[in-house]
Amino acid sequence: MTLAASPPPAQRLRFPEDERRLPWLGTLLEALHVTDQGVAEAVRRETAQGRRLACRKGCAHCCRTHVDIPVYPLELMGIAWYVAEKLQGPDRETLRTQLRRAEHLDACPFLVEDRCAIHPLRPQACRLFNVFDRPCGPGEDAWYTRRRDVLTPLDSYRRRATELMLPFYGVRGRHAVREALRTGAIHRLARSLRSCRWEALVARMEREDARVRS
Ligand code: SF4
Ligand code: SF4
Image 1 (spheres, protein in one colour):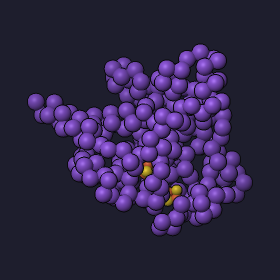
Image 2: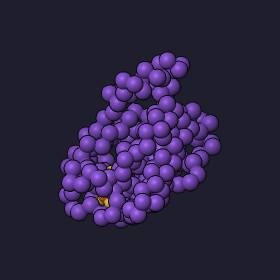
Image 3: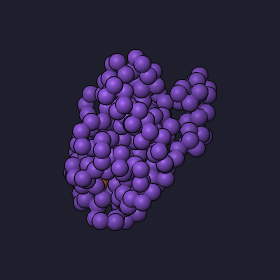
């Protein structure tokens, strides 16, 4: 689900002031960057074999079809920060409305006019899901209909991205990190994006708007 995709940025996103204020943010941006690098390298290898990436801007059936998108606590913090503090313009109002009634939507609440409104901070799962050769049809989840067209992420990049995030979850030291990677314990922290409730984020958006107005 690059969804609404543009090629992964070559450069790591940087928000120097915010990263100084919010030490976890740099960790998240670094991990997302490693994820994007891994996707870019995996896509490069596939295209060298003659395959063509089907994901394009405005192609967003996956943001409707996929209902089990895992999202981790650090990613949720990043999404909340981005929406409350960075997102401006009409998307802000649209998202506020969608987040209020997320459970009634038939798509991810961050999908706006077939674009991902949180594209820079979208979760790793969305970054990693890419499809080759033919765009997904309405209602199609290519993971089940044609697994061989779905990008297989490169383990080395996934491991590195996870390693970067583990200290945030209190996992430190070579042995503990190795064990966490071996057991996949971090995956127990994942929630389903589509089943999250966003009242706290809407309230934070309103506090932020009031702060800016004052
Ligand atoms: S091709 Fe499939 S996975 Fe890729 S952006 Fe389109 S709907 Fe999403
Ligand atoms: S966060 Fe939602 S809108 Fe954005 S890419 Fe993921 S599923 Fe699509």
